[in-house]
Image (cartoon, rainbow, N blue to C red; front, side, top):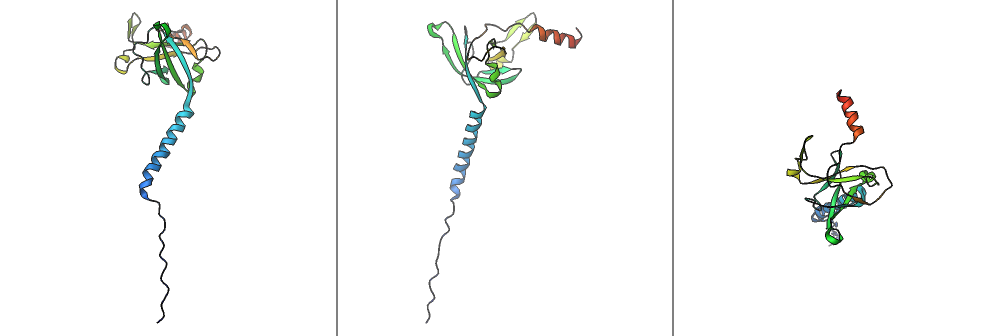
Amino acid sequence: MNSSPAPKVSRAHAFPLIWVVPLIAVAVGGWMTFRELYDRGPEITIDFADGAGAEANKTVLEYKGVSAGKVVAVAFKPGLDGVSLRLRLKKGAAELARGGTQFWIVHPEIGLSGVKGLDTLVTGVRLNVMPGKGAPTKWFRGLDKTPPPDRKSTRLNSSHLGI
């Protein structure tokens, strides 16, 4: 009898499906890391006499109602005569890190002009900013209270309202 050669059996090395989920997780994590590093702006320090309510990784800096950065660290100044807040600005808000820029902590206020900052009772305090036009800098002294409104913008708003 004629014996035919034994067939060659080979297994195709298939990629185990169990590795799909970890690979997707690594890809998503890599994308999130890239996006965070790409959107990262400068880090600045603001000194305040009182940092009531400011918390690292919770308190945000807002400009015109939009988040422009976040507090990354809160520390006492040497001699315990105030508080230093370290903020990481977003890349698009890097122009806020200029001389003459004013920062203040928004607290609820009741005055003759009305009630302001009531939302901070629910959301917590936030920082607000009025941009300056000086040279780029990384250190600022924060204001103790909200500055008065800019007279130029008040006049423009009044003229649009017919006042």
